[in-house]
Image (cartoon, rainbow, N blue to C red):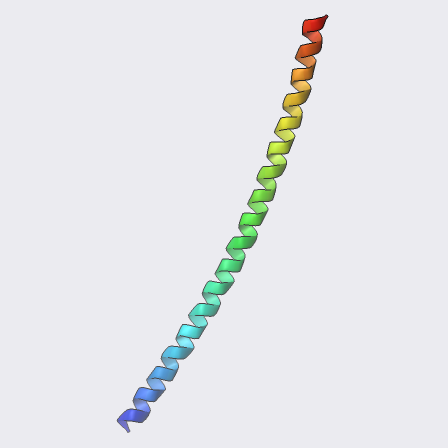
Length: 66
């Protein structure tokens, strides 16, 4: 009887371990998607700021020449 209980406990432990692996895998996918979104937003923000800086530099250059 003791061996059967030990086997049942081991199987239950393996089930819990498998569920934990699934949860960690899902969490990893969520973090990857969040990082991709943040990275995309930062790239857009940087590109916009570079464009605005170029426009303002061009404006000052024209004023200096006049």
